[in-house]
Amino acid sequence: MAFWEEEHYEMTTILLAVTGLSPAVVTETVWALAGERRRVLPGRVVFITTVVGAERIREQLFSPVAGFGGRTVWESLREAVGAADDELIAEPARVIGQGNRKTGVFEGLADIVTPEQNDLAAAFILEQVRQVVTNPETRLIASIAGGRKTMGALLHAAVTLIGRETDRLTHVLVDAPFETLPGFFFPGQPGPALRDRDGVEHFPAVAGVHLADVPFVPLRNRFEEVRDFPGSFEGMRRKFSRELKEDAVRPRLLEISYRRKTLWVDEVPVGMRVKALAVLQFLSEAQRGGMTPGDQPEAAEAMNAWLRTAEFIPVGVKPRGMETEDIRHELNHLRTELKVVGFEIPKRALHLPPHTLRVRE
Image 1: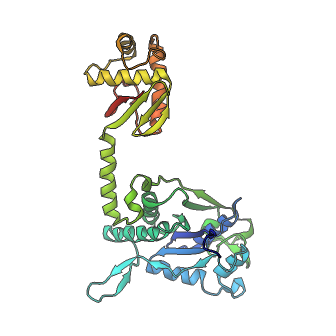
Image 2: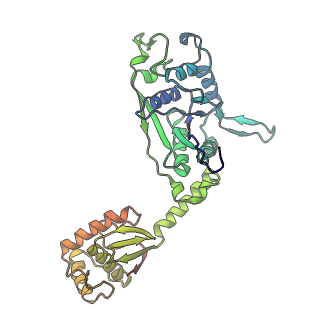
């Protein structure tokens, strides 16, 4: 390829799954992904688990099963979904743990119960997510379906902290009775019917497996520094919580242009009606002068007096007068439009959040 030709890189999808004593949640997730309208088969699959969980993964997914014709569950799954040679490559389980200071040897956790163990899990899970999201040629699908509930919650938190809009967070749901049937891994699995505790037979082919996308807010868009080095989980939580709290009280810069019918909030433009801009400017100036109206009728009366002397509003666009209903209508408009940019005017109040107001040409 010549140096001037643009090289095309194939995006790699990585499934990152927290798992515990039931690794079938991973095979169920893969089956559901393969059945989506826009079929998705991860290139790599990463298991985050404990020592006991890693043993269950080895026994249930990667050991030959007589009912599967002597093949492993993972081999059968790859065949059932038509995986290519470079798809569904399962990596060795990544076991949560820490180094033993006396022996100098890494020791995995058998379970995650105590606060200290949860702290270890948080740091470990965050690091696994970071390794994926810092690579621009990867997409992350993070599954919170397995393991202890705290593991799923920590994975959700990690993806919220440093995940991207293109990443996904998922949970898998399986119809009864298959969600509790031992030996069920995916609807297309080979082998005989499965029996429940009462001896009733159930055929895997009819099982319903559903993938639910779990919404998350990518905070990395607010905190640029996490793109390079996220630090510790607890350190990030404290730092970002502090900065978000400061955001809530930090004065916003508002700039009005009546001719352009635009309000800029910290340089972000928002289209706005002239009357709404006038209401905003009136409330801002009244607030600065310590004379915030008590209610909408009082605001209408005071604003009409203010309009007669307002010098910043061009004569050609200045509202002729405001009724109580006009105040209510324009306040609703302001609240709706400004909420999108994080400048929220409290309901049933005429008091604006901290800000500085300027008027442009």
